[in-house]
Image (cartoon, rainbow, N blue to C red; front, side, top):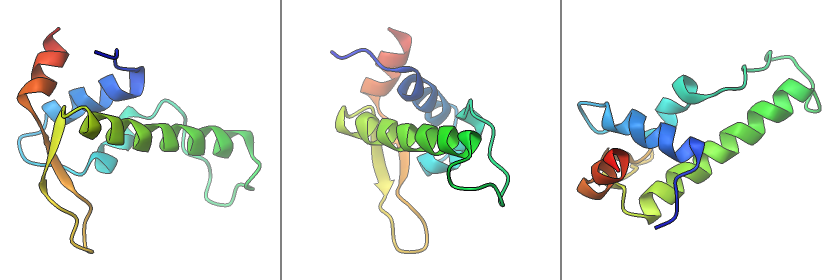
Amino acid sequence: MTPLNAHEKALLHAVAQQQTPVAMSDLFRSIEQTPRPALDSPDDDPVRVAWVEETFALYGASVELWKQDLVRVVHPANGERPDLVEITQAGRARLNA
């Protein structure tokens, strides 16, 4: 069993707190450690670069949680919204380990 990294752990915990299925990307804002850059900041702005890197890390974490069967898709994406997920029994056990 591979240990969860900080993003995976935070995202799994956030999914576990939801009462209904949720798009994991909707939880990113509450997890992000890097401040959002100004909309007009240049692409090479260090704050923007750090925020983009963290956002990609969170997307990677969401994929890893699914690959490890710690979350499951209960409503597949339909073109209007992304996949909606919920935590699995394995995910709850992992959080409590």
